[in-house]
Length: 113
Length: 118
Image (cartoon, rainbow over all chains, first blue to last red; front, side, top):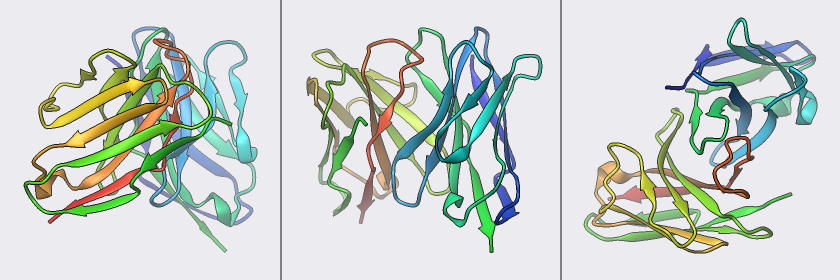
C-alpha cells in the first residue's frame, strides 16, 4: 500500500528565504511523485512531477524537488519565497501504471513580509 | 493547458434534497475522471474513479447509492449527492486525466464545489 507523509502541517518563512517542504512516501513499486498547490477555495494545480529519469525535477514558479530513493523522500524547495507562494501544498504518490493517487495531509506555507 | 470546470462553484441546499455537481473537461477528452472530497484544513480523499461509458469504481467506505456518479461522455462527469444531510457538507473536487490507467498522467483539477447542507 502507498502512503505519503508531509512533515509539518504549517511552515512559515520570510519573504526571500528558502522554502523547504518535506515529503516522505511509501510504495512497494517504483512510484510516481507529485507536488500540487492549492489556493483558498480553488482546485489543485500541478507544480511538478517525477516519473522516471532525472531525479531533480524542476517545476513552475521556481519550485523544484528531488527524488531520493534511499531516503524515500521527495522534498519541495524554492530558493527565494514570494508572498504569492503562500498556499497549501500537497505531496502525492501513485504507482506506476496505476490509477489511484494518494495525497499527503498538506502543508500550509506562510510567507512573512 | 488543460482546463477543467465545475458547476456550481457553491451550493446551499436543504437536508433531504439531492444536489448535482458537474465536472467538464473544456479542451480535452478525459477518459478518466476522479471525484474527491476535502474537509476543512484536510487533504483530498478519493471518493471514486469513473471511466467514460462504464460504472464508477468507488473507494472503500463511500456509499455508491448516496454519491451517484455518471460519466456519460468524454468531457462530462456528474456527481449527485442524494438525500443530502449536513454531514455531507464539504468541498468536492473533480479531476480529469487524458489517458486511461497510467499513474503518471497528470490530473487536471476543477476549481471545486462548496456544498453546504442546512
